[in-house]
Image (tube, rainbow over all chains, first blue to last red; front, side):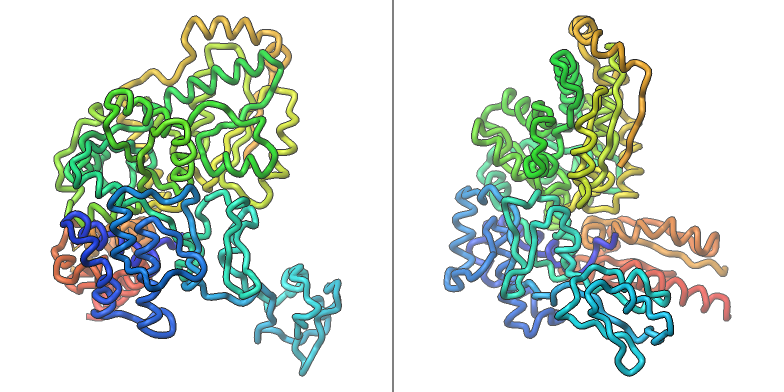
Length: 515
Length: 88
Ligand code: FES
């Protein structure tokens, strides 16, 4: 996946500019000049002219300040005013994604076209196979009548020369739940009730129109006001730099975090709790449990009417934040991960109690370290034990199959034989697939990760998931704690008794269906 | 000396602005060119400070500096360097 492109670079440079200004106390005074200073050296015009580009830079800065950039906006309100609100701690609303209508290219509706590779052959499978009679031959070449075409794609599949191609709308193409669609005016819109915040459109749109509502300014403001910042670092975020995690931890401390905690330690406890929950469900004769650590999946489960199979166990982020707040109620907790949906999860959880004060993405943290001129490799490697004592299982949550491995390990003392179903990346087919398997009459653990490959392939990652995967293996191997998550001996014994009946008949099968 | 030396900056600015993707190329280049190309990561080369990051990521192919390097531009520069080495 070619993540690194100009749209991504631009976003990261803007994060870095904003960080610089905030750290030096000049954000409110100077933010209005950023669209100008950015465009004076070697600026390549992106949209029609430099004025349009500057207007869009202004909108991008607004989203970095946490504001929505959808539709017609108050163009007279200076960025300064928005910045002052953000610096005063105003948080973005619950839905962390907005679509910058002004940056949207209004791509033409997705359609099939015939290219010059068409040979005007005798067989004419395109014409023969078209169910709508939309293909005709003009001047010895196929021609698709857009009025009649229903975008079924049969002509494309049947052409032996691959002469027919689909021109997609990138955002619509990648959205697994049909939440992003072009409106009447051709400009894309996000249906918040359908959107699962997987972030696929963020990477897919070549115009960088979908934008996150960031919380960087709230974090920087807390830092400059002397609050005690605690970083809760997801396992996937620990392995974004090509250096040992101990150096990344040191870099965060250098930046100003008072303390760094590895969320993987909480993940160990989550695996134990989910194992316990599973055993209890089996006791109640419910056979299926789905993991709940991926917030995009939690949102998707709502839309698929599958909430009843979701585990009630809170995510590792919330468990870690709870620990942090218990130790220090005045601390400002900042979760760091490659995920967009965590921001929503943190917001939702805050209705009960304020556990996670802000969420930063790996991408944002990378750009903030860049702004501060911190070289991760030059830091003195911190002892990982200072950040926590997770097992390799907890650290494995970052990658597909990791949660399953951890929960199964925790269940191993009870005699329950568990089947698993792994969904690595939510697609358009996930709903029907899960509807089928949830009828299982054997104990079934369903793990769903919205991102293909798991969190290391999150939409806001810094590094290529293949590379991050290799670093994750090293991080797992460095675990000092050798015992994985376990049901407590006592409760395991009870649970074993409790679910003896349900496990007996299923003892023989361990199948793994993978998606 | 007919090897080509590739230095990829993994300083923070370069890494964040695209160096991570260049690093992902190392395996590919080793597979493609074998021992003819040697790749190494380098701490901040110092160029980022001169350009307010606008030209990061930087990479060196022998002594030639690549600005705003992409996997494609890096590969092209390596191929050019290889053909220079071979032709004289
Ligand atoms: S980080 Fe690459 S030149 Fe400084």
